[in-house]
Image 1 (cartoon, each protein chain N blue to C red):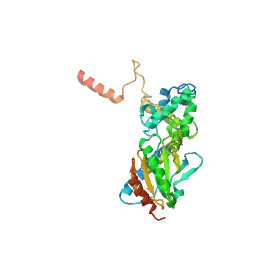
Image 2: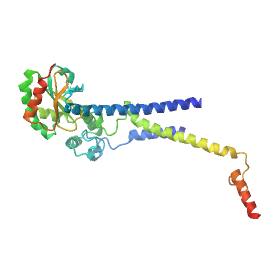
Image 3: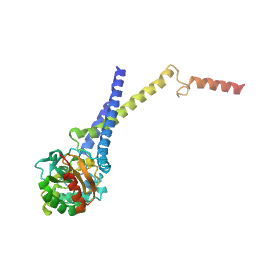
Image 4: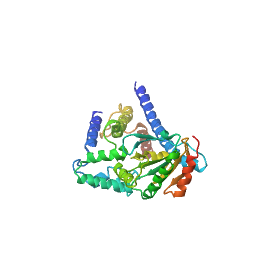
Length: 186
Length: 156
């Protein structure tokens, strides 16, 4: 009887340790997935964008990246407390107004921010493009982002294209990447 | 074993009652209880812009007379449960509190059992040996034999 109890306890201990190892491996794999996206783009590859789902900033619905299949998407990660984000906002609004008829969506992803601060920011800069809210910033790791702002471009086929821009972009740089995203086949 | 169970219950109760005054918290207390989402350290250790904003928010809520639980709920609504430095003591998160205590209790129990077995195996072979005249435990037979030999050689 004592031997059976001992065996059960040993099996339970092995199971606990194995579960912890699997959990650790899963976490590391997810982090690597994010880091791998930028590296793949630099090699000229076009990796699939992570399939993420967000709440809208207003909290009245959800935004899935997969909903934009068939559209070219500018994914701009920002926060209201980020200074360069304030300079980018008018350019993004201009780009959205100019290219939306061609099938471009500008998606702002507000992360690690207070919802009310983000709403004030949106009102101050008159942003009308969709804004997703990611309070705890879970999506940042999925893309391998390390700060704000960071911008990615998704083609009509759901694959990333062009540059991964870390920090503030310039007008020409934005234009060039938007054209690359619009030029992708469905 | 009963003592261990009692200790576990007391530790759990202490853990669930721990913490400061919920009704009138201070910024210094709360800075230790929330994590800055950017740098993943407690607010007291962070100088990130979002941490400054969170401190400002906490100050405003304290001034408005909010309790610690109300401030905590407001921050969780914005940043998710990850903003809490310690997991809440309810539901699945309760495991984070119970498992370390249960693990410690199990380790102490296992150590107790091992010690008892070890002391039993040490005393069993000597159980038949009569106690020595000075009341101290008898010498190991091998040691006694060598001692006798040495004494005989010394006398000789």
